[in-house]
Length: 94
Image (cartoon, rainbow, N blue to C red; front, side, top):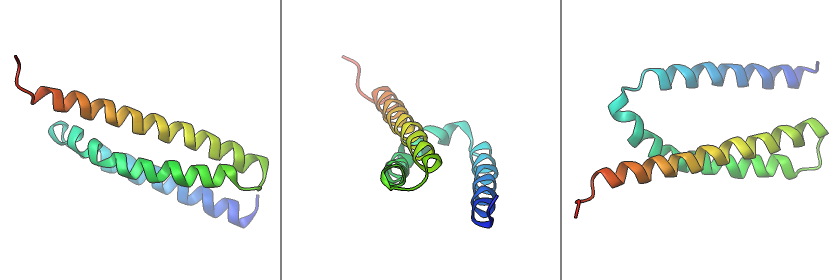
């Protein structure tokens, strides 16, 4: 493996552990509002994944970029669905 790939893998694993620890510490009452705010971050991730998938790099980069686009898109859509459900709880019932 090249040094660049090893460094990228190290950053990925470190980010995964850090993300897991941050999410694990969030109390349930704050999870939905924070997830709503995270939709903007997921949108940026979709754009970055599209850029990676669209570059003329190796086949592995295209495959990983495509997978990143799919996962980030699912995250954005899920976030909007949860936000919509949360907002429906605060509407007046007729």
